Length: 183
Image (cartoon, rainbow, N blue to C red; front, side, top):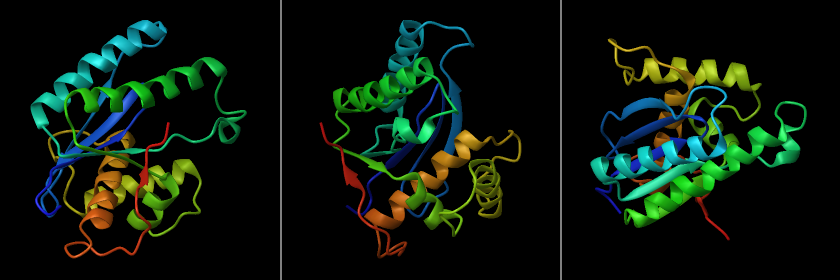
């Protein structure tokens, strides 16, 4: 698999993305699909359009995305409407990758990514996001002319984790294999 371009996503209504070959500086950014208050259909349509363009332009060999948390984990922090949108996006964006013939599609557990990238699996979400942004800056990956947000930083962390797992000779991590997507 050496020499395969990896795209990594932190999928949400504001999605972070990162893409590059292992051993290079990743490109990264953030896309907000619609303004607050948009309908499910508007968000879904915008996500499908963006994903189609993203996969056509970058032509990754591998897509790795942050696995969604179970709804029981989100109790009290989100509502059914938001959970519905997030689960829909996690389904349709990889489906677009499949249509765009991305041959390998995997998901990564957020705790595994954090353990690899910031050295701990046990940190509150806000602290972990800040630590991830600091790490991206330490590695020199942040564009000095553009603001870095936690969505892009999280995607870069997923990308780095995927590089470590899929290309261990170039980036040894000892982390478990990425989970296959299951129906």
